[in-house]
Image 1: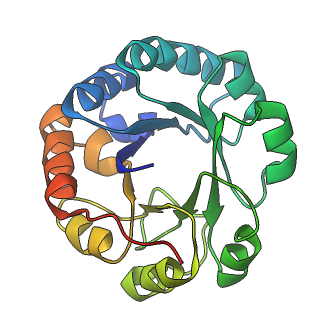
Image 2 (image 1 turned 135 degrees about the vertical axis):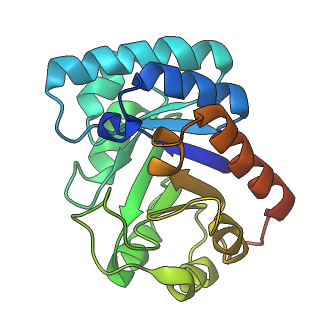
Length: 212
């Protein structure tokens, strides 16, 4: 997992359709899209997953479903992202299969240590900074916390939480392999331009690092 990772939030889209924002983000170079709509019922969530799949599959961009393994299986998504209170990783892996992308949020140092022996595809380091789009999380990791995880973990790291064009560079330099954003793209006046700016920052800054 490497690049700019879009996490959806219809409420942040300022009246624009989620599909149009995702389409613009794909054209501008996102590496991945996660469907995360916390307060959406199952049928509508399934419909959104199907709609996004029809945009992403032709473009070769992975669709990751937040939390809901059943929806991921139903739409043949590329993977799921799990929180600490979601289905345990080992169960999700059995259901999704060996080729699925499975990410796991880590909000405490204990979470990071427990994940070390799991063959998850990436860790979602959450949140880096305080953010209104993630209100149910622990104390922010900040740059020092991200560096600590990078020095310890052998997993790719996806940073999320309060990230935008102003702080993306320092987060990449601290060890993030991907930058996950919500409002920075969903709430932008121009999703294509906002994504392109983030992609440019990533491409000029990211240098692959040795894993512990």
